[in-house]
Image (cartoon, rainbow, N blue to C red; front, side, top):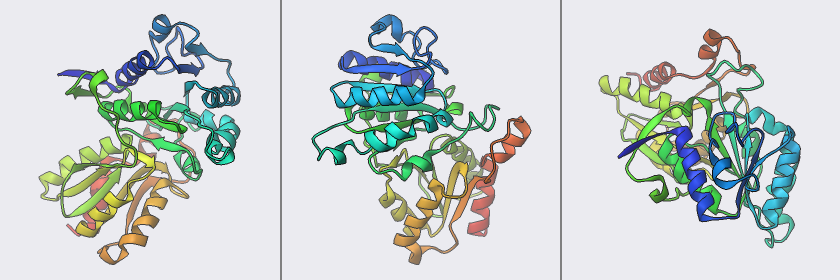
Length: 328
């Protein structure tokens, strides 16, 4: 077995898929010789040349617009947006063309566009470089959203995105880039991971804990504490948010009767609110306690490390929430 960091998993998957399919091109700011803001494309310019690893001007609107056109005319572009905050500059081509291409052209057009972007707080980057704006795009039909929490899932979910025919928003939490995992197979042999299929990380009957991306790592720390206290949780890693595996969550809640959702984003209109609504619609008769949503407050993200740490939901918050709704 071999270990890979989250960043290495992304880089090696891009390389393997670019060798497999010559239609895949990379586009973005400083992705060439510099290797991207977080090093995920380092070395790929040397391997594939400037025709397939394309440094772009600093204009997210232009990059996503050009990539959307390229995707609709035979290529498979992978765009790197340095920070998810900057995706707001590209909402028009993404929301009004890429996401709607199938519908607008009577299912005669495809838009195999992948947008990789770094999201999340925890690095001290402040209010304009740390946001997780997933809920904005969850509201848009036609966009798939992946939020891996491990290097293995990053490989499998990215392969699925690169081989599909729809636009995919691929979320890479900054705190995950340095995390490492032992891979049971070489990157080239890891299978694509299906979208809309959650992973049950731990099994238990006391409470259901739903998380994704970096929050899954915090959930694992919470599980270690709770298990020592004799509390067994059903931990679910959603892996993708669009499509969302509601069935697995409903089955779990019908068994445990309790639900905690860990979502790093601000509370109002969040992904956690959508999950809570769907679970209540389909499993309210099975709930023995109110659904608990652990989110960030409705404020900009602080840059000061002590304030930022208190702004993000933590393992300690999850432990307290489980104690509260289980009464244990």
